[in-house]
Length: 189
Image (cartoon, rainbow, N blue to C red; front, side, top):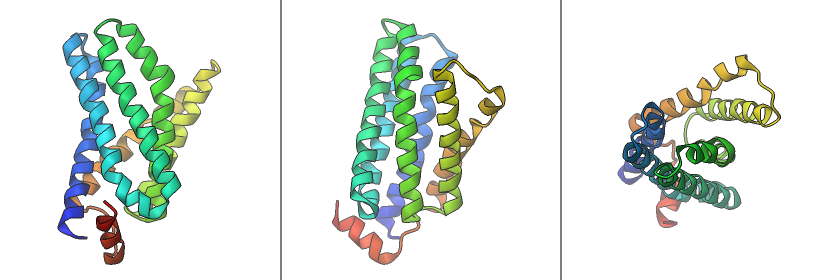
């Protein structure tokens, strides 16, 4: 992998961790802090999509475009949730619980599917991400219909630990890219 792609992998890893900063907003009611964390997280999500697009476009153009759109929607919803919190903390919760979660799930499925197809990271990481996303999707759908499996909620840790692991992997190891794929990605910018 060339130095340029290694730098992109490091940035994506950092942005994945930064995107989780919105969770810190759950620990406070200080409006400007929650808003700032949501805005930073939303911009990080959009940044990941923009950086990953050239890598994914080489793998599958349609899915890469879907990924880009889904992550932009997710990021914009996070920005809106942050600013809405200034007026109505309850509305922020509704945005995350009733709308954002679906954009996240769909985007994550596409993300891990493209990682799997492109072998950009070891496949066990992609499969782990798909399993974690499937668990989150199942839990979310059950709650939509007023059902709950408490044991399923414990498995939600799969997606969080996967994304932290993925972020660290990208910062240390980078992407798995053969030289020919690396050249086509850098040409398609």
